[in-house]
Length: 74
Image (cartoon, rainbow, N blue to C red; front, side, top):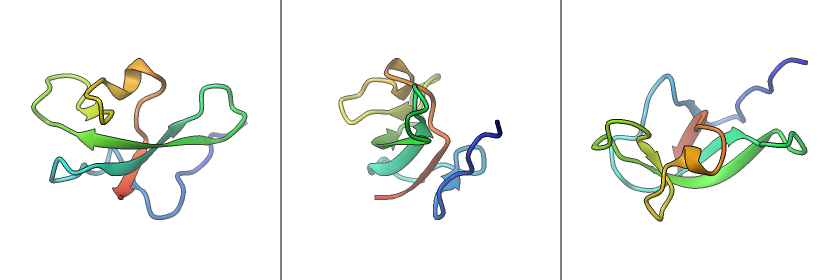
């Protein structure tokens, strides 16, 4: 079964990242496939050597699921 395409309007995380530390809306694969994507609010913080995508509480996005696939301004 092919993987779903990013929803329209989202920049692939492999093609670019936010230039500010303002929150953005991001998508990642939903863990149980009951839906294609999780829509989450995140912050991109390049100061971290690993896991630059962060939840608003500062935890790494990957601590609670799959990595960010794409993002758009919130």
